[in-house]
Amino acid sequence: MTIENEQVEGLMFLGYTAREAAFLCLVALHSGYSIRRQYCRFLGLTSGRPDDLLVRKILARKHAREHPTCGRTRLYHLCARPFYSAIGQPHNRHRRTRPAFAVKAKLMALDYVLTHLNHRFLATEEEKIDYFRRERGIPPAMLPVKRYRSRWTAAVTERYFVDKFPVYLCEGDSFSPPMACFCYIDEGVISTPGFDTYVAQYSRLFESLGPFAVVFVSSRMNLSRSATRLFDRMFPPPARRRPAHYRSLREQLLGRLRLEDLLREEQYSQLTTAKLGEVRALRKLLGGERYEALSEAWKSEGEAAVLRLCDADRPALTPPRPEFRFHAMNESYDFL
Image (cartoon, rainbow, N blue to C red; front, side, top):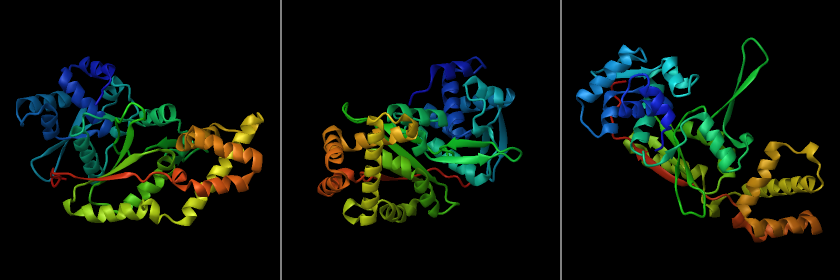
């Protein structure tokens, strides 16, 4: 995993060593909360002097608060604005105090990150938006968003990826972009129907991607089968997909070809950034030759010819089924 040198240097300027700063960056960007064993895992050591020194530093500098738990384990919350300002994240929401079930999800997310440090994680809202928009050509309109209305004014604030679950990239061959992997954290308090909500929020982004993976991270070891059944219901194999699903894809195709007409005729007033992004996403999905054939059929013969070609080339118009992985956490979180 890559951590920006400027962020590490910013924390070193506050008095932390390089390895302390690297670990604290991970905590601040992925969780906000941590416990001692996580720093030991990061170092590959058992508990002892290093984690004790780090705890003393973050408390002495008032960069974190210590929270007692149900057992002997102590929980530490990085919450000081000067600390987050040092890594360029003064408004990061990990600074906020969270209830116990949300803290558990954050600790699980950090544990998952610590066991997959060889991958590139998109840690912040800005990183995720920038990657999917610039590197994958997906407009913000297709990303999971939540709108917050001000209590006192008519202002509306849009926030993306508000769940803050880990998203990382698995590098493939040199001819295709890395596969995006999306983690759903099941902390064991909110039951699996929450996965339905998660997938619904991400559905437009999922439809805009090529191959991708969904990782179901759970603290409940016996949940693997039910999680897999839930995934199969939400992402059925191509042979089991409903005709209505395919019809909706054809309608999307026709709508985007109509946008191509507007583009050719230079009717820019009727085009938005989001609509242009949809055209780019379709071109990527179908590939150059296939898309050009559909576009030529649209121009010469109209909708009937396009639908005929769609029926002959149905697999190309069907979004690939995502890969599913179940990751059981071996760590105990009973102290919460």
